[in-house]
Each structure stands twice: as structure tokens, then as C-alpha cells.
Image (cartoon, rainbow, N blue to C red; front, side, top):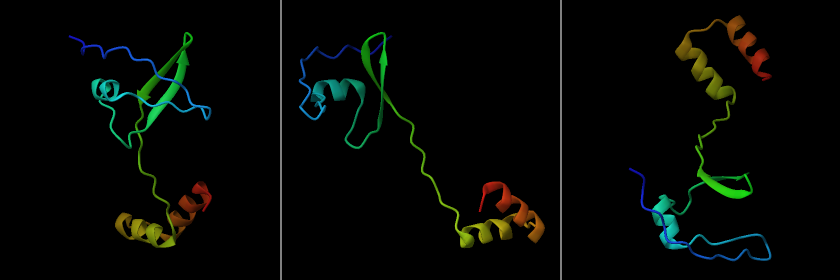
Length: 87
């Protein structure tokens, strides 16, 4: 069973290309402040989909050292991994 359709509402695109999603549309779609959406055009329609955003960690020398200790790698294995990762 699909979710009930949100009422159709007219929105206007600002001179900067922005628009505001009405609260009833946001609620029906489960969109909350801070959510990231993917925008695409499909068959002439603008489509918004929830994006999956994963945190990215930068590996500095201290973090790589912690990995090395946890993985029990030899110095040559660490050097090989660093070479492959371009570090």
C-alpha cells in the first residue's frame, strides 16, 4: 500500500534558483531540516530523492599508526599500503 499523496501545491523558483518545499510536502515525503537530497531530471520531471551520506575520515599518520597496531602489520606491509593509497 503506497503512502497517501501530498496535496499539490504551487511553488515558485526564486531568482537564485531556490524553492521552498511546503511543510505538507516535506511531511508526506519524510524530509526533515538538514536532510540531503539528490536532484535529477527524469523524463522532463525534476525528481528529489533522499541521499545516503556517509562520513569520511582522513587518515593521518597517527590514525594509520593505530591501524597498524590493531592489525599487527609489519613495517613493509604498512609501507606497501601507504604506497597503494598514495600516502
